[in-house]
Image (tube, rainbow, N blue to C red; front, side, top):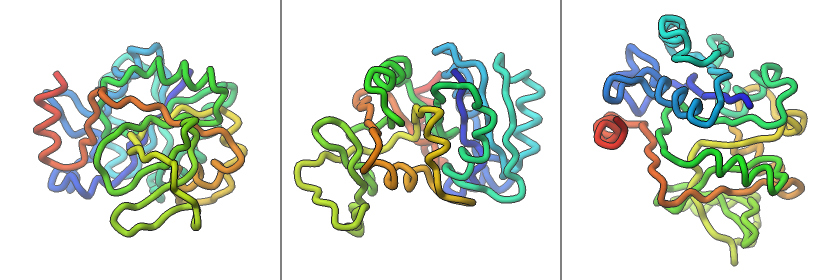
Length: 239
């Protein structure tokens, strides 16, 4: 199985570090976020990884080359001309995954001790098109799931916006997305969007006709290292 790590983002919340560096190379106890996630994937036998790059791309490429991929085989998906967000980034990288039945996807700024093998096992057992790591935690945007854990929609708590519009949310439960997915190869052909777009929009377009499940990992350690203060918190949790 192969994986993709999204490392192309501008990391505007992590200024001033990202004024001169890519977010993926921010350090936690001497190891970059990218290295930590490469090593995290290795725990589950995943050693072939695609990393997309845009913001200070050369620094990421240099770090990978200098460290021999931290023991993994890493392929670069170059987005230096335009950052494509998660959906566009995955679509651009799709040729790298030819022949793979499943692909693991994760954001470079997520640190977790979630049992990825359990998520992959659930994904295979349900024969889902995609499985999304989610948990019970406070955020402004939630995925909405039925009692069968299938994705039904999305809600923004601040504005009250619901997608798809007019969705009856009664009986649905809210979970926060953790930025980790397991997807089938067949997903790539179903992505109709072009250019720059989010995987969230892809899932919301497909959930009415496809089996997209949540994997609830509530209780596992998860930290979105998006702000300078979260780097300090990460240093107390990840060694």
